[in-house]
Image (cartoon, rainbow, N blue to C red; front, side, top):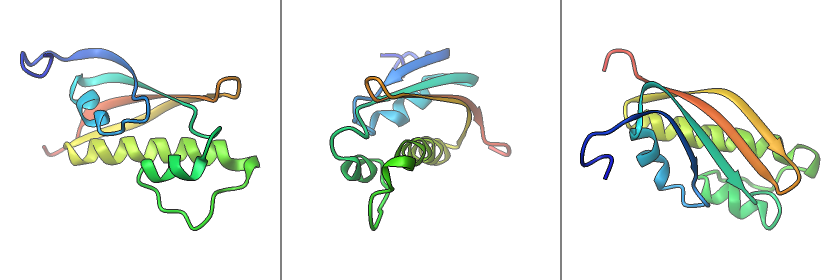
Length: 117
């Protein structure tokens, strides 16, 4: 609906529930200069290698438990930055939070148009 009526927002908070194809639509809802807050849950608890694959990362082996959360946060940031780039946007990570209770990742991005577009 929002895309059909060309509506954009200053702040969008989204939990993609593992369906990463919605990231592009979420980025298009953010007004240039606006903020997108991405939530991802349960990525490291069940099968981390599958989570990395769903994010488009091809790893030869899963990172050690001590650094798994850092690697997963970086994979989420990479996925968002790549999706933004394909739309002619820039997603600048501003803040990230990991909460071990419930395995929750929260990452805040500023979304701007790529210069020259």
